[in-house]
Length: 228
Image 1 (spheres, rainbow, N blue to C red):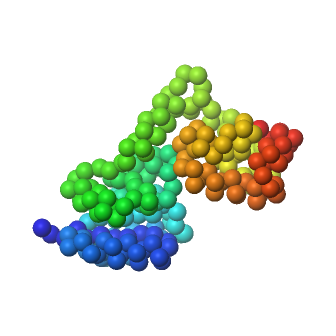
Image 2 (tube, one colour):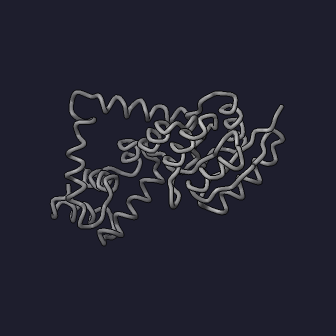
């Protein structure tokens, strides 16, 4: 069997080198290039001739979604798997919309990652069951007649503006609203289709931007200033 020529794109040196070591141990996989950002990944697709790219999302200069879009436009035969720590549904939708054939989280076991690479190389697509469920729920919410889906976008824009003085992103604003509603991290994760680890990161960022110490202070400040 011919080797799978694989390009690794990740802005973290440790991740790139670790994946390089692990994947090169498989006799059916050959790592032919390492890219520290999306621009480099696009460039290497033209010089290293990979069959596949294992692509991170958040990278400097050019993110993984845009890099995937450009790679698929120039080299449609190259197959792309997004490998990231982020489980936000919008990233999944954007990556698949850009042409990626798979979307996996970095917490995956190396054995499963290798199996996934071989599966996608054979022509398959790869989306873990939990992420697929999130996508279904997201699509159902977008089409819901009660206005909780697409119709809620203007409300989110307005809410984002109300948090603009603290530099909150739209997603941080949504997490803040959940905090004000008294939800715990697990409940926030379920409502927003995030991992609990991602929720914790957002909460830490909210505390820092709003200069508060805990959930009670954050909720009170948000309510006092009309942010929720």
